[in-house]
Amino acid sequence: MYGIKKGAKSKRLRHTHVISKQGFRFFPSDEELVVHFLYCKAAHLPCQPDIIPTLDLYHCDPWELNGKALQGDNKWYFFTRRTEHRVSADGYWTPIGDDEPVTSRNANVGLKKTLVYYMGEPPVGIKTNWIMHEYHLLDTNACTSSSNSTRRSSKKSGQQRFDANKWAICRVFDTSSGSQTSLNDEGMELSCLDEVFLSLDDYDEVSFPN
Amino acid sequence: MSISVNGQSRVPPGFRFHPTEEELLNYYLTKKVACEKIDLDVIRDVDLNKLEPWDIQEKCRIGSTPQNDWYFFSHKDKKYPTGTRTNRATAAGFWKATGRDKVICTSFKRIGMRKTLVFYKGRAPHGQKSDWIMHEYRLDDHCSDNNTTSSNVSCTVGEGGAQEDGWVVCRVFKKKNHHKALDSPNTSSSINNSEVVKTQVVHSSSDGALDQILQYMGRSCKQENENFNTNNNTHSSTNNNAWRYLLPIDTALGSTLHERFMKLPALESPITAEYPDNSSGSQTSYPPDGLQAVVNMCSGEFQTDQGLNDWAALDRLVASHLNGSESEASKHDLSCFDDTGYDYQSGGDGDLWSFRHGSH
Image 1 (cartoon, rainbow over the protein chains, first blue to last red):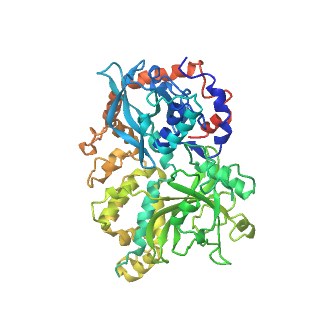
Image 2: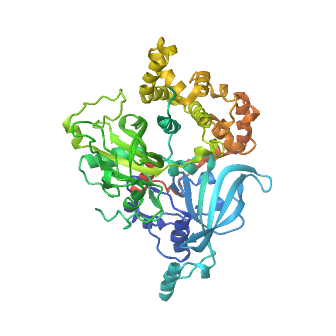
Image 3: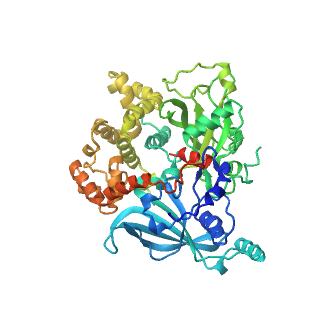
């Protein structure tokens, strides 16, 4: 009822053992999202691990993603059909900034759009803290060599199509929840106190007036 | 060594090794000390004395994905056969502890300690400080490291048995230098540094920071303090414990900082008391936690030098920004949980989703 393909769940189950390890978190790079997940989706290839669900984003407000999309570090990941009409029940997504290229092995493989969620009716909605990164594949002939070889082999089998323009993969998060940095920086930031001690260490070498 | 380490990846695409401190201590180090099997053996053993920090990236790689931090087990090596200090010297430099050890707790129980160390190139005491930082975690039970002078850790000093399980788990990373933005460009004079100190003291007040810093400085400057006292007759009559703590600041950081410390409000007082006193301007980069949300919300409209000295005004500001959006949001949030159409989060997904619950 929310656009999730039933039956995908059983497929996902097979891979759960791989990632149920202490200390591992889903924290994909742009490249991984495009090359690994989105490419496989578009090429109808099996995706390992098959953990990202397909949603109809535009029937979901961002706060409804919890429990439906794959969550990693307070961000939600899902596939959705590409559209320029990004309207949900209570608001709409508007692109901000320029599209960024996603590269893999020095080749452009995709595009990353950043969008912000507005509550209400366009164009007078109220800006929120919800941000979406929406990734597209570039046109089929612009894929990496490894992707091409995969596609060729699948073409040989004569049963697959490649839908470069059909799917997007999305990462949605709430900037006010602080999720942007929590995983990146957990334990990797020095506390303020540590910084103070570090700067005080410098004074060990100061020569004192007599 | 397990094939899961060093390039041969069994880590699924999209996943990163980002253990919490609790996972490092309660899972990895506990199992290591107990010689139990670790399911995905990604943390390898390292001889700290034979590994320079810049070689750690290669040695401790997990899978093929880029990393910003690296993990290893290390068995602590005594500096002197009869002593209890730990030898952390390498061929090119040494790891030097900084600050005081931090107690690591779960929600209900103390589980271990974290020591922060900085890598210095060269030989003590003339090493050159680098950006390489190490967090060394040890379990609470075995206090084999008495390197710290922390008095509230009760240890059996020099107990032979404690050395046998002297395993620690370490996380190494390169310090991000965003704090340098606080300094004026191209200067590193003591006055700028003291501004940094002041700013950070204000914002870490909940840690009892000033108290810790004073103690730390009292300790590290003890020698100088004594020299100072013998060389300065003016202070000889006040040679008591209070001066022991105050004098090092005076001598080490100069009277400017001393005065600033003296001007600090009581640690429990509202930060606003300090905030409008914007004499240095450096605070603007570091809004305290309570203001962070406001700054985020207003992104750009908010300037601390406008003098936010009224919490009620702040509350109204937040409320006006939240109005409409958040109340709607919370309503939908609740309705979302009522939905039983498709429960992706539970029911049969087993390990994968219990794994998610582990993340905070």
